[in-house]
Length: 104
Image 1 (cartoon, rainbow, N blue to C red):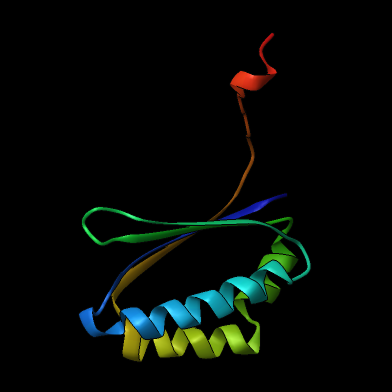
Image 2 (cartoon, rainbow, N blue to C red):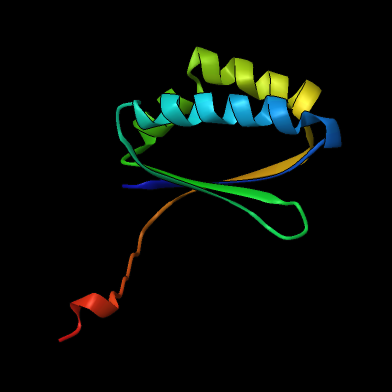
């Protein structure tokens, strides 16, 4: 079953540059991980950042969560980069989609 993770965060004002570098590295690492499906990141007008990540199954998600370099980045984030964050993780049991291009 597909695993969805939503990571919501706010950065410390002085952390933008360091965050961008580390986020780029973590994104590339995730994209190369077994079971990776998709990642999207957004920044809201109030400064909140949201990253949505999909992995094909729980084992792949756990392997990413526990990857040694990812663990290092998590610790750095706690101590140097984030004012706050929340992580939501869930199994997806329903998906529906629509594409205007598919309509004839």
